[in-house]
Image (cartoon, rainbow over all chains, first blue to last red; front, side, top):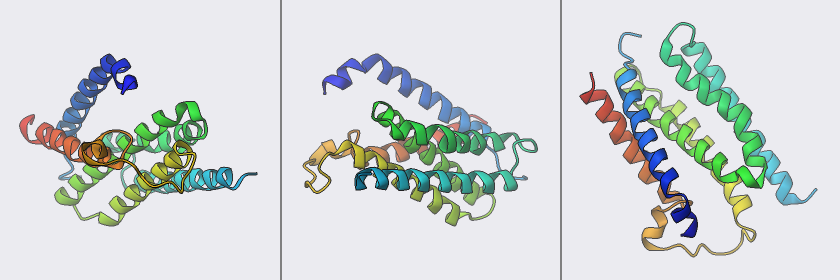
Length: 34
Length: 155
């Protein structure tokens, strides 16, 4: 678990970036009509 | 050559071949030069064919390889499921990307555990913590929810 403590800021940064990225991907991809 | 190393090499080759197959299939169906969202499988495919084999090969970058492989597969499953519901069913293609995920997981665990005959000691909530397989199921559902929110709420 020590590794997780060490990674805490990175953990938050990754989660925020991933949520923003996937949320945008859901907005971006509209397959209908293609 | 130790058998463990040759198994690793074979699995990495299988990963590259699965990725190359997916990359070529995507390029012919929706080329990035024609449709902008073609870049999603294009970049994921390039990453899986070029970067992942090298990252999986070296012990230092093993976790990065596993994370990248897992999340590219999750994005693949979610977007192709969306495509299946919106356009036409492509469930066989989804099964291919799931197979790629498990090939990557096998390479990862082969190197992570020195004794591959040992029983798994993980129980309870630890099953959904990294690097256990439950971590990936939780993230598949969580990212699917975020993707659906982005799709339906941000029009």
